[in-house]
Length: 83
Image 1 (tube, rainbow, N blue to C red):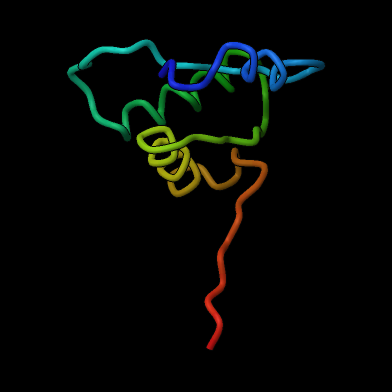
Image 2: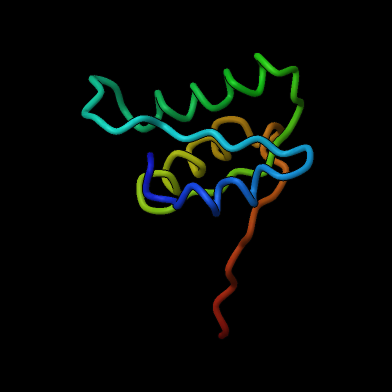
């Protein structure tokens, strides 16, 4: 939503990057619906793939997008645990 500072989002959006933030509220749809919205934004801008970042609910949205559309997510980090 709007938890990230405007100045930080401006730095992220410098150059050829987009920053998409959801408006605050209590929408009548799920995090998975929001992840489909993110993929729809890629479609609207004819973007094949994108790096997705989020924290808290935004992280869940990015994870759902990666699970449901792995070919559309440009980067994924996997944390390995030591054995």
